[in-house]
Image (tube, rainbow, N blue to C red):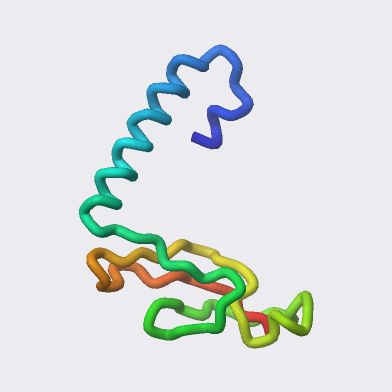
Length: 89
């Protein structure tokens, strides 16, 4: 979808892809798929996988997640993919 943002001649195709994407996302949400929240939260190894550490941009973000490399998901409360995150140090 992001590749369509700059294109002007594919407006109709963009709308079609957007409709399909929204329908798929709604169906998955109805089946219990949820994105794992991470930004600004303390690292929780039950849901997050720390890839690296970086200096925290603010003192409040020390030992908290400052970036999400890859989103994680749960399906009916069970982790199916851990969030890959960067932790402030």
